[in-house]
Length: 174
Image (cartoon, rainbow, N blue to C red; front, side):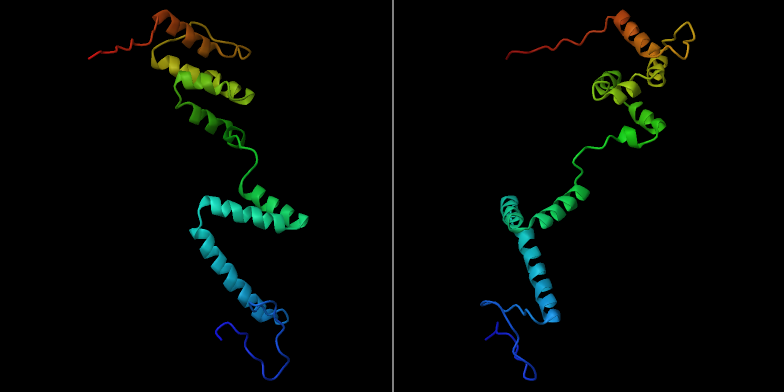
């Protein structure tokens, strides 16, 4: 029989469980069988659909002890952060400002709605001054260190003066 456990002529018969032979009292053989089955399970898992994978994961979690479930939760937490990380709080401020400098004024205004820190960054004069100077829009005074957002306000006023409107969308009827 192809699946019969090997006989050990010199020692006691190996203790096995149920119809599939899993050596319970021979650690080396047990480890080998475990690794073979683990590899086979991995091959099957790779071929399953997302729904099948989810079902087996739920089944496995239901069989786990509370400590094993905590272990799984820790593994997931390490791989998938529960909170999204804000790159602007992790990077040096100068790099965050450099990234924000590529945004157009409308996008900068939208960024100001994300969080208080993004509002602070997106309204800094260092960003808006560059946008104003590109159009040749200068302010005729030197703001004090306590005056913040002067360049953004200036940009908005200059755009209002231009009476910029969106182009009309023409619909053609055939």
